[in-house]
Image (cartoon, rainbow, N blue to C red; front, side):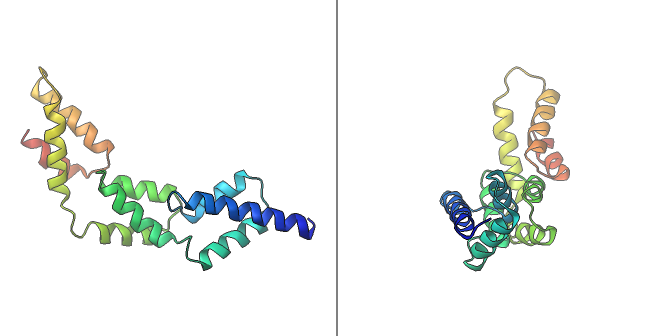
Length: 156
């Protein structure tokens, strides 16, 4: 690859990353995959990612904290958030640190109980056991812990 061609590829990679980061933070793995989809060489991708890491624009720790915080507001359970972060290539230790920090003042039982009541109120003319099954499945898919779900739907 010639020097001019390499500069064009680096410019293309940088522009791609800037465009992506304009809308939300991305994990390093996500950025790498986006750049690979543009058929850029590994050296161009590595140099681009290194440059953005130096600028602190690609930071998996910050990404994990912000992702966890935003997903808890949705609300989703910590189990689902952990799985999402794992798929995004975040280190398990970083995931646990982000989850621990974000859930410090997060009352999962309160959130799950509120969601369970809201969801159960949508079902009319259905047997109570069936309502509990549906609410249980809904909450489980959202990633809440089984013990918390059972406590919350017991009172429906």
